[in-house]
Length: 525
Image (tube, rainbow, N blue to C red):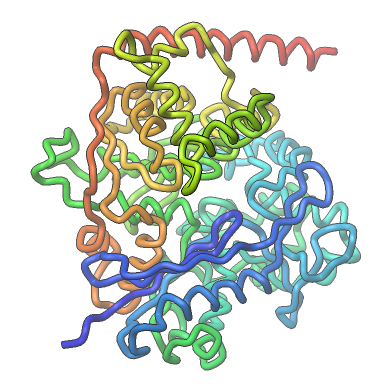
């Protein structure tokens, strides 16, 4: 019997990737294509949905070229929570003053709507209870309000459809306008079973969103992995090089795909504190440009400054809380490349391995190890150095986009525990999970073991799980997670460093208190 496969497509911040995955969760091939990012002015970041779809087609064709089309049973998409704007005829609508129609995507990290987000927060509306009490400029309502207030003629009045990028991709593949609960609950204030709160949209001056049963932002919803429409349309199948009718699962945000790709792994035999415990004892951390902290619970838990609880936003039937750091990988890159010694670092790294070169972060990690030598650990090199970690605002648990500055994860973890989460093991994936020092310090700082996935591309695996579920080869998302996700490596914390990190965390909290006092004084004028 011929092997069956699923395709996972991941649209990240700067690239589109695809993977061909077996029923057992083995990634057979991957492909990647860069996508453009335009920054017309500070804190404005835009992309093109046309280019993104074209790159999706390119990478899918590449990963499936060695198998028969009939062997591909399903496809799933994940993407950043960016905002796509189309007109009534599904053509791109510009989202900037330059009027370029191809630049029709307001990226997740675009913070142009900070003032609108603050105004929405000040309404104190009940929907805010599910976003930690504070509306983030990275969510869609403030972005929509900004477009209405600033581009009424060129954008708002012409717009017929507003999609989260993951939903745009599933619509492009199937023609179905059904939105995923993942996107609508996490980024749009949708809340089942009631659905959209008309009073909220009216209170922020966007009553026109209510027209035709909220058709511009989605009238029909479903859980992640549910098969959409009749599968791939004739046009999409031709674009992707697959069979028409191939199952397409309802999409998820990229971080949530990472959660699907790691959280459900069978941990028997690894002697972890989450063994023989419900999946609620696990936290997934998706570490890339930013970091998302995913924790699920059987009952709704409200965590100040943390998004959620959202029912069935990632795992059907479970409540999701999502914490996060707006800048992690991007912050590390900024600190390294912006340093006065960066040119010297590049040269030293090049001289170390003159022909093949060496990753500068691997070189830095090795240099830190040599500095520590046998006398101490790398962690203790920073014993008297304290860096405020928020350079692009604080997503969680302070929910303050104005803060500018690796204890952020511990801060989020403690806030979740205080609200009732019982987290015993961390499951990491994403680009930064490949940095051994980054992983070890997270284990040390939190005092929890860290599980790394067998397949390093866990986000792609999570997207493929959606396709596997849609194909009905697996009956549920949970079954697909357990069947396809595997443990690769376990990193244990250095428990001798617990007192060091406890002291460090206390300093961090004092810095936070001083920051708040200073900010209050500045606000008083």
